[in-house]
Image 1 (cartoon, rainbow, N blue to C red):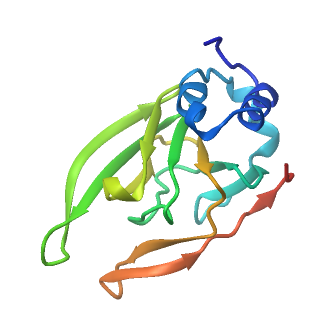
Image 2 (cartoon, rainbow, N blue to C red):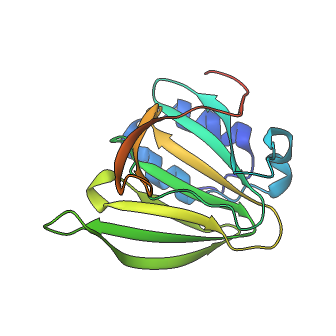
Length: 173
């Protein structure tokens, strides 16, 4: 499959394709950092979530991370999720619940620009954290939009349902 080097082409390919083709399309991404800059917003206290496009079939969200920002441990509300590392370095840690409900780390990997990872609820839980002392961006590709997910709350030592909101919303498809 031909390399996809623009957001416009990526969105067009997803729009014209069936769900079964999404993995192959996503694996052909080689979109430069410059394509994402106009969608980026930043917050000194937490990462930001910027919706690039939302359709009934898929959703593209650009997460913008200042240094050392990260997510809580979470699942994906039943959705398939690919993460494309736009720039910088992010660590992904994966977790499973044992038979008594305790979480244990199962793997850890570092994503650098151009890397891709995949996650769904059957695989367990994960967290992402910016490793850089500078800003990083990740593109999150969801099959069907995601409105809520289960997030581990340290204070309650349990998972809670979190309604997801955007810091910016560009368009609907």
